Amino acid sequence: MASASGKMCGVCETQLVLREAALWCPECDEGLCSSCEKHHRASKATKNHEVTSVNNYKQLPPEIASIKQNCSDHDKKYQHYCSQHQELCCPLCITTNHKKCDLLAIDEIVKMSKSSALFDVMEQSLEDMTIKLGRIVEDRILNMEKFQEQRQRFETDIKEMRDKINRHLDKLETEIQHDIQAAEQKAQSQTDNLHSKIADHEKSQDELQKNIFATKMFATDLQAFFGGKMFEAEIQKEEMFLKSLTEDGSFQHIHLKFRIDDKMSDILSITKIGEILTIKNPPTITLAMDRNKQAQQSVPKIPKTINDINPTLLNKIEIPKGGRGNNISGCTIMPSGKLVFVDHVNNRLLIHDENGLFDFERPVSQRPVDVTCINEYNVAVTHNEKPYHIEIVNIANKNIVKRIKTSERCYGITNKSGKLIYYESGRGIQTVDITNGRAATTVVKVYDNHDWTYVTTSKDKIYLTDQYSSTVTCYTLTGQKV
Image (cartoon, rainbow, N blue to C red; front, top):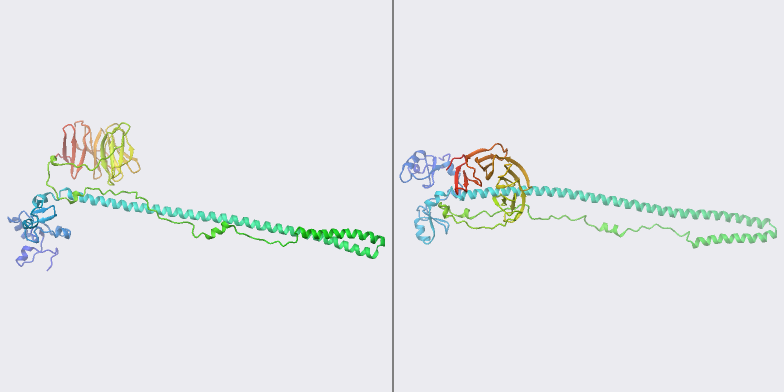
């Protein structure tokens, strides 16, 4: 019969009894019912085993749950870890395959495995990647919005160009129609004038013909002789008129001809209005992937004293000089990897890109001291000169978002879960909500007027520096000294 959890008590099964397991022992690699768990906890051999509930055990990823406590080759318990081969080793593994390897005792290294920087770095890396993916999605949305704006603008430009072309062609058509009408009117006028002249001469010729007939029939010989001379002169005039019509081309045929301008023909050869291209420009966001991967790959180390820590120089950053030299009193790293420095004497923030190269500077109020990152775009800056306040600055649009008033000079500052934690001279460690900026709350009261005191947080602890005693003091988030 299958249990609701799917796991049966291994001890009971060896006695041919089926009981549902409530707990799981990873070292024994078997389930335990509540009764057997009591014996398991009391037994000398198993009392130090860490058990977990079956429900919690089932939440483990299969690849994690499949990691066994004993060596599959020799059925011996793993006792060492080979950092060279990244393998767990039982005593027999050491003698066969890892004689010359650098081995670490598992009992020592696993003590700090969950609380080491390993999981913090991995979780932070995943959180950073989630933020980066969100930035990419937001950037793509903004890019498409801009793309659509460009499309609408281009469609409008094309329509306006088409309208201009249509209006211009309409104008040209109207002008050519006027030219046709003018040519027709001119030809008609010439024809009408010719008709009028011909009509006049036809009338004159009819009159002359009547006169000649009358003279021939009824005039005396003298009249006929002398009149004939007159009629001959008139006839010569009429002949001269006909001859002039031939010479001046009055009765040539008039034809209307139309020749299309070559540029108009070129329009018909155009196969497209223009060309649409998609151009890829450099991205507007940068994804800094320079997180220290060693912390993700290394084995948790046994804690050492501060004297055992050996810092390694990773990069040098050139800070542009101000008018009064430089006095860098604070810095912070943005989620994008950008670096923000405080120049105390020149009253400015210096922003460098993720590679450490100078980007731009932003003036702030008098005597800035320290800076902390609030989110991807905003930082908080403390000041130690009146009027005492904390400035919230947007480094993207370079605007002052808000000012939070303080009572005294402020120095170190950090951000923890939406609240600013900062040191105020004569008052100690203060905290204020970033959103509403209401009255600050004292976390740790410090009566001495110590200046240049810095504060930061790590997990659930607050750390306070004191340059006068050269010490760092640790407090809980509620102000208890550790």
